[in-house]
Image (cartoon, rainbow, N blue to C red; front, side, top):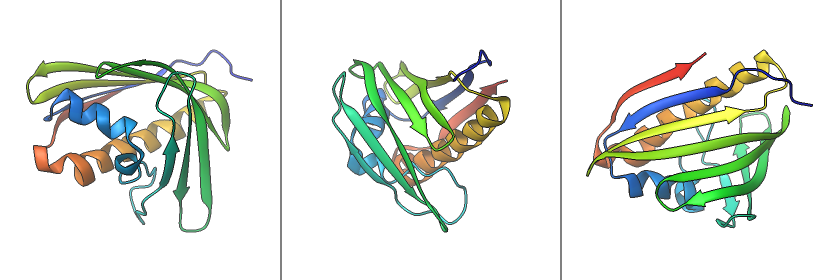
Length: 156
């Protein structure tokens, strides 16, 4: 059961169009290229989804010694502006993730990831490190053709 720990908030500005960033979160073939929570031993994940409100998603991160299964349901989608979904993993069930995409200019997008309903500070910290690794992979493996991120902050 989740306890009232502070939400994990990660903010980053990407030098890419808002649509490109949104697509990286909604299309399984793109998601597979960057959704991996380790900084080393990278391996593409297996991702499936039904990208509609009420639709399900599944991510399998192929770690060196284990496969990590993540899954949830999309709870809100506003095309090119917001995606919200539940998040369950081996260490947390039915937490909540909200993604906000704000166009700063034609090729610059402010991005905010808010992850809520953690059962402990340790699990919150683990997810913070995982999300930061994923966003670095997104930047380096998918968005590098449209330039890099400007900044990243984590609210603790």
